[in-house]
Image (cartoon, rainbow, N blue to C red; front, side):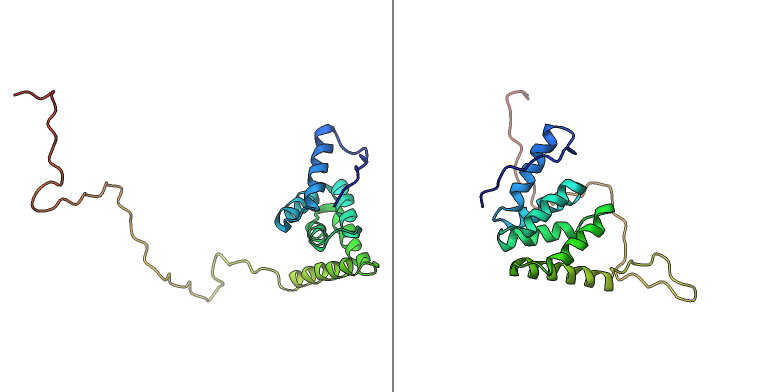
Length: 168
């Protein structure tokens, strides 16, 4: 997909920031879904600038992989842009493009499932009245001495080579 030149928003600090945003924007539209998701994740940390690029990718005529990567980046938004990102995903449910609607629906479903079943954190100490579980294996000490080499009973493996330095 041929991308048009992006107009800087004025929030970029220097030329390097503009170039980084251009590179990440190009990667969002690439054919490799893994690279596109990685670029979208990096854009999610860039607040307004990243939000604009992800919004453009989601509502463009790009392929489904680019739209999925943009939705992933919007799901991973943190901070003050998080509510705006989820509002954008909800707006995507009403978009005219079928691919955009499907991607937004899937992203919202994944977020809903993540909220319903948060990852359980392991408890460090047992609660009162409970005993601590016994370990399944025994921890043994590791010797810091160098292990002995195997030497066959009939003698050494390689006899010492005589050199010209030892004269008798």
